[in-house]
Length: 135
Image 1 (tube, rainbow, N blue to C red):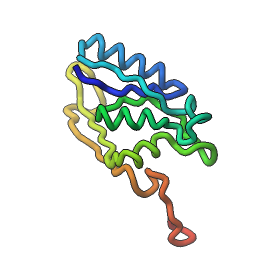
Image 2: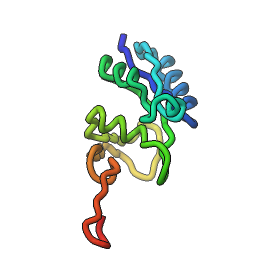
Image 3: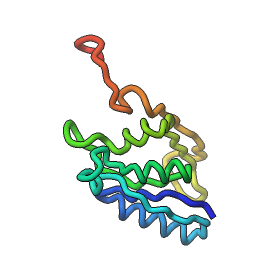
Image 4: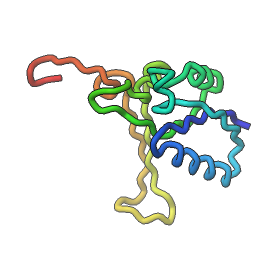
């Protein structure tokens, strides 16, 4: 049995997380979900949007599934995603894409993985003005 930290998030996050849990249960994946909090529902008590207990659970179990969380635009709290990436040094965003048998798509036989560095530059909200035209 795998123990996996489940962070449902906020907004549509809980609905998506619940659907994923149903899919894993239907597939009989042996998971014990360890529910933890992060997102707008924690901002009042935890300005980072992530309680220390959530960080402790992720460090202990080494695997987590996080539903969507609200990303502020221009003002408000710091992004929960950026905070998680930096705090846990999650340096790679790995996005596999593969064709599924029986599912017609624009392209056949797709099997690729896109890897994006996660903790530096604009993806991590680290921006510097080099010149008036270059950031």
